[in-house]
Length: 340
Image 1 (spheres, rainbow, N blue to C red):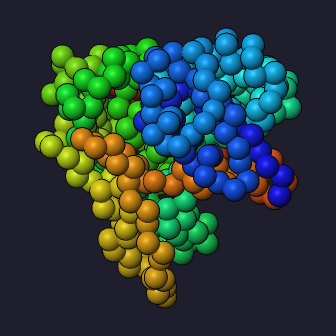
Image 2 (cartoon, rainbow, N blue to C red; image 1 turned 180 degrees about the vertical axis):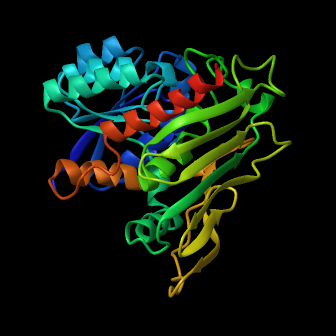
């Protein structure tokens, strides 16, 4: 299989994870890393990474000269679509960390640049690789539970000063965007991936415990209908004391019910379906561990492998630009509904 060369823009926690995986995977090669904060670059040598270093996207575009096949965008959320358009127009494939953007309009700009350039866009939705997620997708596609009646998503996490005090962009409307974008877009994605688009959302959002730490909500309820039928809801909060408590999805159908739960939708808590025996699933990878806080499943190696295989004609993108845009659109609809 042909080796694919990568560069990483944004060398914070998630950028370092991308770089380490690219560096270690036998079919990929790390060309360069870019970050506007010089201190962030210090982690490269600790990871055993030797790569060209750039202090801006402009510097990268000027000096790379097309040596990289793919660029991973791991910057604050507010830069995702802007940089993606620039890189696509310059002839690079792009991997965009979640969320794809902070507006549907920005995501559509990326899709337009993709179509004009003929390059590929991969959106990071690594929770799709978790065994319970893949199992849920299969159960619904095979109509094992009959008609879907109700879907409830619960996301109850902790994000306090240990998180928001670490980086100045976190908690800002323009660069962070909100809890549904930054903390919970993976779970909105799983809901969209399995059950499709929503309509007629009604929502309430509040900032209970973070008035001095961020510009937006930390908690909310949303109710809606699915375009394909059935109704759904999302209940979320980053106000849990001390640690993440739950990420779950409960599904009720005409022929059965199940719940995928745990802290990170990492286990099937129950499954009661007519004429169906629950299979034994592979173990779910642990969450990304960032010291004082934890994120979603540590499945980024699957993302990089999928990019390499897709560009070698052996696979298709697990999450493409259109799907990334739809998740952003759903989140926008929920926030807009809260405004009345």
